[in-house]
Length: 509
Image 1: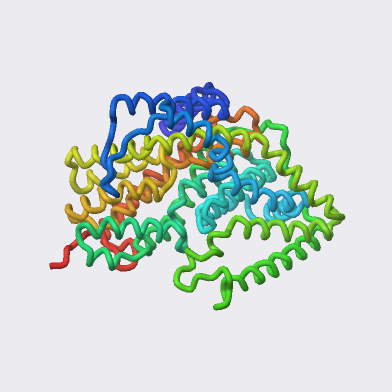
Image 2 (image 1 turned 180 degrees about the horizontal axis):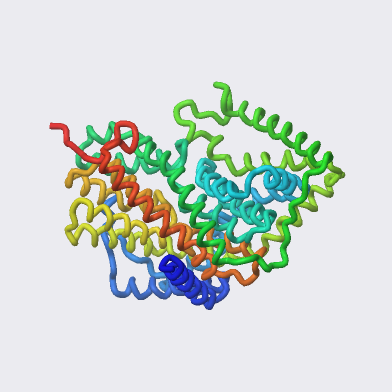
């Protein structure tokens, strides 16, 4: 009885968050308002003279006034660039060209129908969360590939599509730091950690490995998959209830012709991957980097690679099943896909202005540095400092989405501070990665937040910022708690968090 009352209370809180959030203006209007507020705040903070010292460079950071003569000039001159330069815009549109052919030719539908008619229903949620976590190998591609597919998959099973979208989004974004393999994030953060550690112990810093958090992140994949599955099945989907929308994703058994088409698509995929591998595997491969695969041109070309991986099998499938008869059909399928992205393109315009203004004014950096200085000033030690650091980093993540940008600011302060208290740079980096991932899914400032809303509105046109935040909040809280608990249990065991990476720093005398 008590469990039911607690669950009912949780649902009421989430419903309240949704109601309040959905009373906000349309996301397009809201981002425009945010952009205006940044302009106004930049004038106020600049007039007051707020400034901080950048710990990474030693330079003084001031808020740039967008209502000054130079600021007004920037607003008008940068408007087009802010739109076309909005980070997810090109990634989303290019990827969707390939996905559109695979979807409208019927390939994705056939694959999903084959999947849902052969895999137990109870495995679907876990597969989505796990796939989302592992998608960080492909940088941000999971946002535009797996999130909408999660909704389609659940709808095809007769489950609520927003629950499938939420499960995939949670894995992709909140579990971003975890993976069974190394990703581009590991060397990116590793270099910043090494540079910060050099200020205390250059010899120690030289021996810091990019794999410093690898063991912990491997275990995290399975722990977060379990937690994400339980949250989806026990809280999120029951709260959403039975889907009453008009979009139907019917799941029928795969026909013989469709099986033939999928076989052809599979062969096309194998050939495509084989040809792409020739660009990077041989010593003469033009997209190879023998010293660092994660820094190779191949790894930085994942968006067009994903385009080809979807487009070519989709084309072959369509030709076999007669869904594609000529080049006009292909062009029409791509055009129809882009037509469905109209709302996202409008969102990208206003969101791009806001993100650009926020970055240009230095307000994000000022907030980050001020938060770091606050933790340093209150004099916390040990476990208390680690917990406080995780909370502050998670809060800052609501304002600055870039993991490397935040760590470039915070690492020079907290890595040396924690080393002086006897804690290793590897541990500090791990605490940061936990904080950096868990609040992504509840931040409207996260670049892909807008497109997730656009995907959700396919199934429910009333979905707004409040709906998405209230749906994702249980994942954010659940992942945060389990990751922090897991960290402290790991510390009690004394087992290394990565190769040659312990919890404590011992200077070389």
